[in-house]
Image (cartoon, rainbow, N blue to C red; front, top):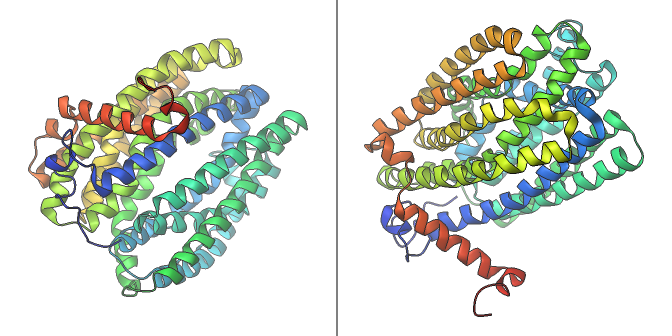
Length: 468
């Protein structure tokens, strides 16, 4: 990413006011959000279809299996994907980042797979209690793919190649839906078919990411080589926040398996809870899309521009996330009662989780701002404290209230982390916390204008506009 700024200061209130050009950053975010709408729809259909085909118990088995590679990558990568994203945003050569990607992936893949394989007898009785043994061993061989994907996506986002990654995601989402229909729906392969779908998607995704990055490296050979020591040092600084952030999201999944002694009960609870989480975390498409572009943008901007940008981005994120959340409530309730009656018991957990997901959506943007400003230590303070709070609450509440207890723990810890991130971002930017997330008239007007432009950009929807 270059340090070239828009004609008006990037992220300033002036550049985002009604009637003004959106600027490069806002256009990229709009592009990502447009893709996110499509991914949102496909993910919603895929999740409902897969849940209907598998049922709560087998869905719990699937969740227990497919979350394993992500956990291993989060624990074992020492924050290096975050570091690659940061240095890609600073404009270091793609060729050097690719070399580091391959070197890190080879070393960590061998070490992590071997270590987890040795620990499987213990893990299968505790954290992986609900995962079928054979599928658990099969999914371990996808860990190298998960590592390569994590590094590759970091490079693409760091260099602002948003369209390329959007296209890959859309293609893979469509392929995934097709494979679920064929392998799980038509051939009735159950959990085995769903896991096979995950493996195929991982392989195809990594192949497309690497092809894209190699083409990008040939087209853009400039840039200083990324210093290995600096990359490792940045990764070490961000690692505490990276690993605690992951477990803040997923500790409940593993604690349900560890605290519920009956494997059958644990699988069903995990299946129900995963449905609640899937629906509630659909709102994360908004802050994830914004934050992935925001971090490298802040990393390459001046302090003044970054500070002007964070308020507008935070307020728009709040507005969009609230709209999505409000829309999800009736869709989720009606969809579960009409299509997935076996999952009706997940609805209380979903309704408890949703406010926490909304509050943490703002926290995600503030975390991207702190990371882009080079303060991963501040992020670590919030994530570590939130994880401790989350685990403590889960240990107490899951035995008492089941999946609703897990949802309550997430609601409290998500909100706590959002408050901490807002406090640090406020002090660093000089803006009041309310200016960082409470939307006003300008954000509403900008959102309406953006939706109107997107409507006009679609050949189908343009015909429905008044006057056509």
